[in-house]
Length: 192
Image 1 (cartoon, rainbow, N blue to C red):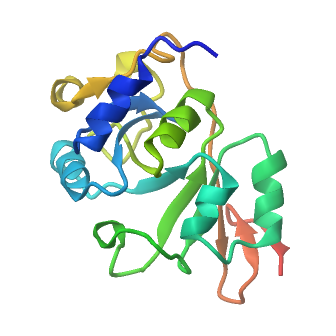
Image 2 (cartoon, rainbow, N blue to C red):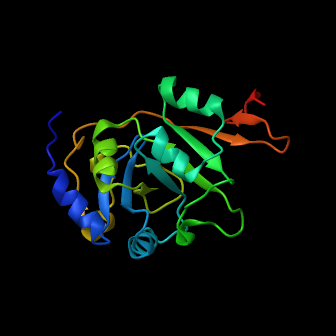
């Protein structure tokens, strides 16, 4: 597939601890390499809130590097469920220390459904840290036109991909409840 962006330019920015604006599965996001503590701190200083982030992967294989005890039913959902899935994971491994919330020890993992985003992650060879491109906690930035200028001014690269689209997809979250059962967005358990 052809993309408007030269992906090699994006990879160069990310490998040099830069921050990009990129359309994610559910919103426009500020992103950096998962290995770049400098990039993550830059995002946090620009967004100016304690942002919830997603460690976004391109494949189940990459996801399992960070969540090796991934439940088989989650793998099945990742393969066949159409909406993006956020996995709240406390049994993680190989996650850079600067990304771990010391109060909960949980991280948010996702497997991108977007072909462009997956290609960037694949060529980078590591997950991206995605943070909703907003300066408030209350709204997701669904279109390029909604991006605050302070974010555009501070990004090292702004992707052209999907600039004329509104992102309409909502994410589903899966986590383990206190009984060790898998729960999807507060619904009844989906697996034991």
